[in-house]
Amino acid sequence: MTSATAPAKNVNKFERFKAEKDGLALKDELDYFAKIGWEAIDEIDRDARLKWLGLFYRTVTPGKFMMRMRTANGILPSSHMRVYAEVVQRYGDEGNADITTRQNMQLRGIRIEDVPDIFRRFHQYGMTSIQTGMDNVRNVTGSPLAGLEADELIDTRGLCRAVQDMITGMGKGNPQFTNLPRKFNIAIAGCRDNSVHAETNDLAFIPAYKEEGEHQIGFNIIVGGMFSPKRYIEAIPLNAWVPPEDVVDVCEAVLLVFRNHGLRANRQKSRLMYLIDEWGVEKFREEVEKQLGHSLEPAAKKDEVNWDKRDHIGVLKQKQPGLNYVGLHVPIGRLYAEEMFEIARIADVYGSGEIRLTVEQNLLIPNIPDSRMEAFLKEPVLQERFTINPDNVSRWLVSCTGSQFCGFALIETKNRALAMIKALEAELTLPKPVRIHWTGCPNSCGQPQVADIGLMGTKGRKNGKVVEATDIWMGGKVGKDAHLGERIMQGIPCEDLMPVLRNLLIENFGAQPRQSEYYKPPIAMAEIEGENSDE
Ligand code: SRM
Ligand code: SF4
Image 1 (cartoon, rainbow, N blue to C red):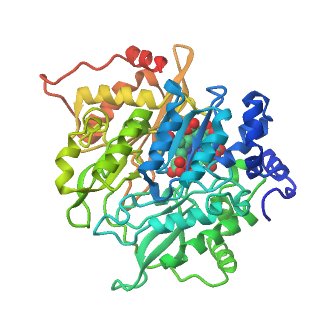
Image 2: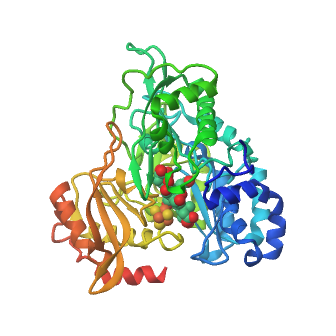
Image 3: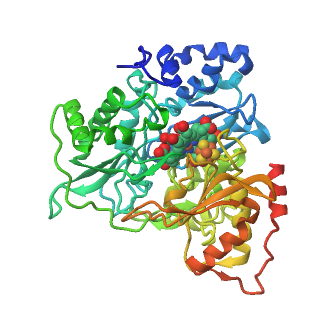
């Protein structure tokens, strides 16, 4: 089955509209849409099918779209960052960009009238936003230090790019993979610290030697990881080992099995893990082998993920003598045009023009020679916005989009997360960083289940009124022996959250009140709410 074919019986409305018209068909209608304007576009085309081209209509900001790009392995040249900056700049205060939890970029404020022009520009630069939403494969994540670190096991750059090219038909769009039963996440880890959260992906590759004694490096495969409002589950072993050169074929085979056999009746039960539940992992493996046309080798007994996860912030040596990469902390992943131009500029002036993104929504600039480091570290954008030495309280802060732009959100996240972290930072010191993740609803785009402290948006009640609230998750472990956390509290009104977070940090993570000369009184919640409503 390829896209736009007759839907099977008992399918949901998404299956019906996919069968009526493939989202990729809208490529030919963009000029027309630009002419008629957003209000005249057929609703299913506007709200759903345009996501096949990476255009997400935002009901929260009528008339404006979000554009989700593809950034294989999270790597982009400065020229792409400059194009993104030019795109969001034209929308003034309404335009900005975010680094996402899949090592990727999203642009905001886009008007449909400008899309044909923006796409022509993307085409000139070899950039693409194709197949990034709805029932497509998301950005392919890889180790952010690929090719830079001496302890690397496999350089994932080429693999992530080759998988992306296969899925998207070299960025032009590939109808083979535009009618999956549901979204699909792929991650390829070549490092020792599982920098991609492999366990949360539908399909992930983890470095492993084929035999004891370090004979041949390749990957163990895990499958079926997912977060959804109904279920949060880690990927399970497929009991398969592959050499790097087989990764693209395995991705293709797994996707074809999912496409052809995945469950399509209930959209809440369509992710890959539900097919594995139904078949059992043995049968799933056999079907993948049939699709591949050969058998898979059994998994290596142990994998090579044996380090704690690193945050990649600060100045660190590369394997190339005399070169360094510098990790910049980007609070809640938010970027504005001027800063994006600055990042592109400093990547060109001091590095090789390359920029890398992390799943923690931060960025790295690699290839900076020792001799240029002093001048680099004095750059105003590092002093004023993107520090290389963030406080332990805010260092690992991650947040999803939230109600500022996302129609699913039950609460405001990014701005609130930032205001609260500043208030906590003013009050407390931490002996080591604590990973705090915010997500605006149970879809879990901000991955609260992997965090030390995860905050998930919900609705609660206070004084008889419905208020914005969060459930609290704790105990997520990343890096070696990664596992998901658990929900420990429910429905805490956001306005009562500060003392709860303060106590959790003191009781569980050794936080101490700041010395009196540094002590700043906590920001009153009323003030925080006020800040949010201005945004
Ligand atoms: Fe997500 C839907 C944002 C990573 C699980 N996600 C959405 C939408 C598209 C909903 C919408 O149309 O408004 C959000 C767009 C809001 C906006 O304007 O930005 C959205 N998801 C995001 C991002 C931007 C969060 C962020 O701030 O970084 C991440 C974009 C990644 C990318 O570059 O492609 C993002 N989403 C995730 C992750 C994390 C991950 O991949 O590691 C998850 C959980 C993992 C997973 O998918 O299993 C995730 N997003 C969802 C779900 C729940 C899926 C499910 O099976 O139920 C939805 C809703 C859906 O698909 O029905 C969703
Ligand atoms: Fe939107 Fe919910 Fe995802 Fe946050 S978790 S971006 S609120 S869908």
